[in-house]
Structures are given as C-alpha cells and as structure tokens.
Length: 190
Image (cartoon, rainbow, N blue to C red; front, side, top):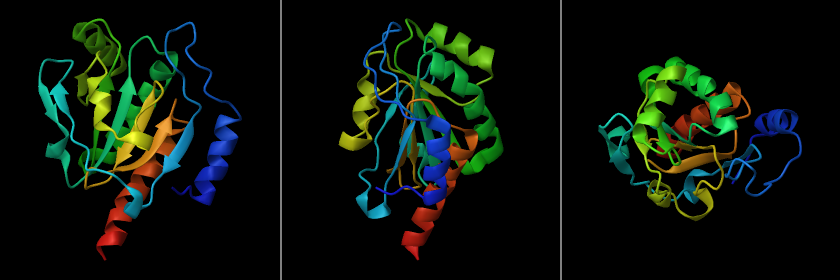
C-alpha cells in the first residue's frame, strides 16, 4: 500500500485526526476519511459484481473492464453520503466516458426510496440496490468497505486500486486516485 506524499499531506489537512467511532445514533459505522492506495502487484481481483439497480435495471461490473470505475457505497439516511454525493456527480461529469461510476445502496427500505434520493441530487450513474449487504462480499479482505460511505477506485482490470473509508475528503482527492489508477495500469503494461 502506498500514499503519495502530496496526497497524504492534503488528506492530513482535510481529515484531521479521528477514528472509527462504532455504530452511532444513525445506525451505521462512519469512516474517518482514511485513504489506502495499493500497488499494482498487491491488488486482488478482478472484482465480480452485478445486481439489480435502484431503477429496476441490471448492472454488471465486468461490462466496464478497460476503464477505471469508482464504486460508492451509500444510503440516503447517511449524512456524509448526502454531503459527498454532489462531489461524486461533479467528478462523474468531469471524467466523462473515460471513468465509470456506480453506487451500491446498502440500507434504504426500498429501491424507490433510493431512486428518489438519486433524482433529488442529480445522480446519473447507476446504483445497485443491495440492502442485504451481499454486494459488499465482492470486495475481498482489506479492500472490503467497512464504513458508510466508502468509495473504491478500481483500475481498468477491475482490481481495487484505492479505498476511501468514510466521506471523500475532496473532489481533488477522488480525481487524484482515479488518475493514479489510470497511470498505474499503463505503467505496469509498459
């Protein structure tokens, strides 16, 4: 695992010192904004993930092979999820077709509730509806999302390149991780 010096400094300034506080009054484990980035040779995968989306469609991560994918674990009752969603939609718009975004909704009572939330916040990318948490089993060991929200960046081979535990510190952090995932696979291919 590595953390670029500039990214580490930015994260330290943005996240401050905190730790997992356990389940709070909202009924979920908040993350602390920590970022873990994995060297190409240390990545497990590729991740196999598919499921029904909140709008009734289907999604298969394998269809995105060849591009970086940002996976965000969320639910509409999570304060940090609400706060970071506009940042995710902006990053999705900025990266265009070069990067795919997908959500995994793990707590809403119905797919319709999740869809209302996405519509209200202008989310254009799909979200798998997985209130049973089964979708999270696709992520092995150290890369398994342990907090809500969590964001994982998968490289073009579908392997976890980085994980943010908790709210994304900044759009710059996310875009830097996406760029790093794009570069790392290109470097290993040459």
